Image (cartoon, rainbow, N blue to C red; front, side, top):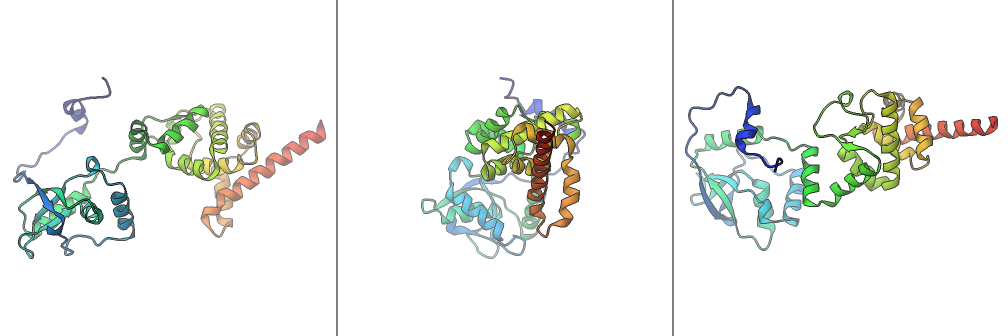
Length: 282
């Protein structure tokens, strides 16, 4: 299977590296009772609003295959207990779940300064998972949101780009604005989203200058597609650049979130005026 590769095959992209000389002592795997976990706020962050959302999500969807072991160290101030270095949100979510009483941990013998350094480095060196990676794994896992995105882009003759790249380097039928497509499907439905994607693809193919399926273009086009059919939307998009519309209408609205609706209404009025003119000259 070409999609399954060894670590050695993937390691070639690291380039020149300078491995550390002292790797320290490996931690010990241990199941720890949730009642024996503590948080040292001298270096740990307090749970904010986003953190509580994350905790509720973990608790509501708790599953052991998704639960990563916590990184902990023996507490200096609470003998017999363990300071959480990494995994505070997971620990609280597990504590709130009525079926969970203990969790897997990796225990490191660190003093307070070393704990703070570990906390800083673990959080500083996190590799952010891209929306593209989440989408691909979602498809493999049968996630309804990922499947909905694939269904509408397939229907529009559009492809999700294989890699993250700038718009001018993409083909006219490629896009990467996954979260925007998901939002448009939720707010405006399948048909309007498909019409917008199809029209933008065709405009890009005629312009032959990279993809035009950007976040801003979708925000405007999907709203306009609630009124216009594919040909009407295509004609008016060929004559008007969405980024220019954004620069025109954004300064005129009190709420920046409203500019796509204003721009879409302007496109609709232009399309209707063009149709009226064609009828008069027929």
